Image (tube, rainbow, N blue to C red; front, top):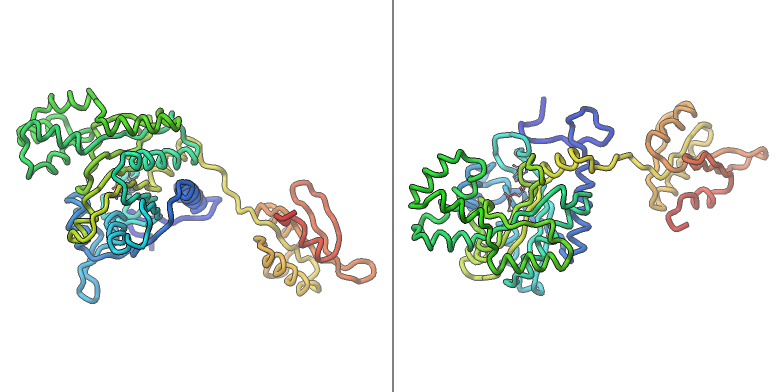
Length: 419
Ligand code: HAM
């Protein structure tokens, strides 16, 4: 039986099939995500993968509600697999913010579920790095979040020639809409039209805008002018001070589909425009208040970066390292009379923190050595008896083929990271 459409199996490398997903590559991402987020002073949190349905029907907006992976559980509760992390973290912050110093900087790597039509870059589950910052209205926070996004991608080997973060502002669009006397009750409908502007047929966009009392040429002129708001200019200047100016550009085609954004918004794309968005985010200063019925009001902003598009991009640009098992040692058991002593050595090596393997059942010596090399082991150990019948330990450094024979302590010292 195959796995469900839009779900993935992750294999250790070498991969059994060309299109298989690599668990090693996934962990490589997770490691870069964690290291960079921690480097920016973010702390890791997690939440439940299954949530009450109404957490999303209330605030995320029509688009994500249409993609919910929801059902009624055995206790008659309307529930949904989490399609995004933002409502969960907003609820967690509303419940706990008093216990933390501001600004609160948190990250998480949840697996998310959206019942979407499966296509390239879009699946029914994906992992997403979420980095969010709470309790700061200053634009310095927006710049910090964008810089973190940029540095996550740089750590993975991508540079300004590979990707760009397109910066925009919901407020700029809101002001545009208001100055053209748009109906305030239909503002989100207008944002949805802008969100789809690059994917939709021009005549469809024009008709939808006309229905909202707007002129498509007027909208196009606003996008093309790309005049940064004072806030966006401050973000650009802040990033320039870090030497990261080349990684960002003002682009009012971006507005974000989710309903809760209130300020600066952004999306990261590959420069060639071959892939869907790598990441997206922005400011959502009202969401915590909305979810807590006004009990807690805290400004918030952050981004989500998915693993699917990012892995496709890294693969296409040749930026994924080759992955090997990388054992520290293999214990070769050629003399079954010394299996007990060999097991004792395996145990001691593992207790000293090393990754160690050995043959569970009797096998030819050359087969065991060959397998040790395939497993990327650094050292091969063999327990032997010397001429006098005493137990000794032979250690071979597999890359240089140099060998030494000594006591147990010398075997344990070989390859010790402390030496
Ligand atoms: P989002 O734009 O819906 O934002 O998702 C962020 C990223 O997750 C996308 O750019 C994409 O890389 C990836 N992604 C989304 N859906 C799928 C899918 N079906 N298959 C594969 N990858 C996908 C959010 O989710 C916001 N909650 C992010 C956020 C955090 N905003 C503030 N804080």
